[in-house]
Amino acid sequence: MSGLPDLRNPAARRAVRLAWFTIGYNLAEAAVAITAGLVAGAVSLTGFGLDSCIEVASATMVLTRLRSEIRGGRVDERKERRALRFIAITFFVLAAYVTVQGIVDLVEGTRPDTSLAGIVLTGASIAIMPLLARAKHRAGLAMNSRLVVADAAETRLCAWLSVSTCAGLIAYALAGWTWLDPAAGFVIALFALREGREAWQGELVCED
Image (cartoon, rainbow, N blue to C red; front, side, top):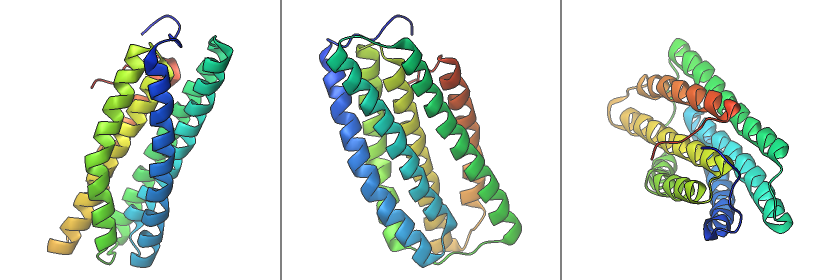
């Protein structure tokens, strides 16, 4: 992806609306996940809520840049580069968190309580997040914005984290398996590192 974003494209306004939705949804998701995780002693669910906070920070940054650029009618490439690197850092933070927490969970044999609220919440995110990521991806491509495409990749990663967390909660509730969640987290960490590196270099394309 090369060249400057087309701020006159209708997709730019659509990207703004998607950023607003991302912020609202993830604020609610973070509140429920962190509360449920603390009540159940489920570290993975609490981590899922913290990831929602990262998603809010990323979407807020993207929204601020988009609104500023649309109002100004031009793109500040240096600021966009800094914004992309901010998103890259959030990928690295997420990768570090799930890796360290996964190792701790495996070593300590963490056994959380079953959380029905967590299963319902992550199940809803499994349905919503891929659709949101795809909508962002299409808007980013339509307006030629690496920033929006990078944010789409972060949302897609959150979708995978929803799958991992939900699978872990269900597996523990049904069979007492505690290893599935950290194992899936390690795979997600690899994706996060790759996406973070590409975002840092400005080469993120986010396959649909």
